[in-house]
Amino acid sequence: MAHFEVVAYPYLFGNKSSRLALAFVALLLICGEGLAAAQSMLPPEPPSDRHVLYAPIAGTADFDFWEIVLVSNEALPEPATLTLYASDGKPYPSVAIPVDANQTKTFNIRTILRQIGEFQVPGGIAIEYFGHPSALLAQIVLRAYHGFGSLDVPLMEATQFASNTLDAVWWEPAAAQSFLVLGNSSAKTLHVDLSFGENLKQNVVLSPFATTIQPVLYGAEPDPDGRIPSLHIAYSGVPGDLRAFAYSASISNGFFQTIRFFDPGEITGASLYANGLHIGDGPQHLVVKNIGQSAVMVSGSLYLLGAPKSERTLPIVSTAIAAGESRELAARGGSN
Image (cartoon, rainbow, N blue to C red):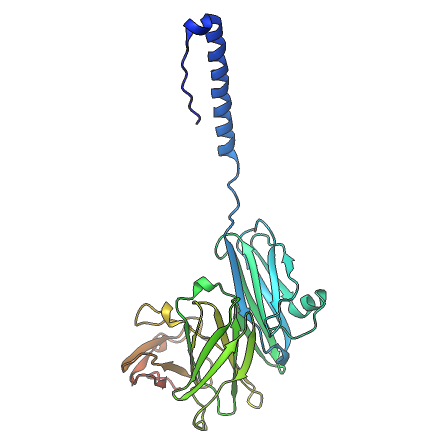
């Protein structure tokens, strides 16, 4: 509400003039109140926070289908901007994507490349939008690796990372080969230190917005039943500048899996949880790595939905793990 102070001087203007002056001030008061009321009825200004989602997309040549899936939780005040990068970091022309509320859209990346007149294999992808956090979610979906395997890679914001390190551990059959994909989401050169297993190290330099794909390095020969590789990544810049994912594949075994990296800076306690695990009739592998500086004891439980009541909970055998060691855990009453 607008407020005005009224002061009359009858000895200067006389009664008539005073009444006119007061009427004028009253008119200003009414107009001011009306303006304030009208302003309060206007819709709020649209959010103007800038968000950039990014993921590397190198390695697409081995997959038959390249897609990006967008999920919108609200309508955006202006179209999102999608930018593909070449592996050397060169940006291709951007594409505007209108975003309505509560929609899921799938785009063929090959079609986008044809539309902008580019025919090279892409290296990275960024989506910029203005709005609330998580108003727009996105992931890359690569399907039919040599006809069978598929993977999905979420696009993330730099603010979702807490440190300059990433870690992963996984199981794979002896005949498999894993491939590491690194992407620079920033406009500065990054220096990346890779530690494979316990002994093998490598340094990588990534130009701004560049990506690279390379085989994971292994040490000793694998056990005939498989091996447990691990990888620790440390990089320059600020948290979130580097993005990484990997996949493991064996064409002869028809084996394929996506390898996730986790930011140790996001871990706040001594317990880890996962759900939606697909446990079938074949061998299952639960592997862990101690990334700390001292030995730890690991234990836990598996909860099986749909199993008989007496079999729904499988305790994980308590296991000592030395600093830097990777181990496979066993469930009591189950098999690895």
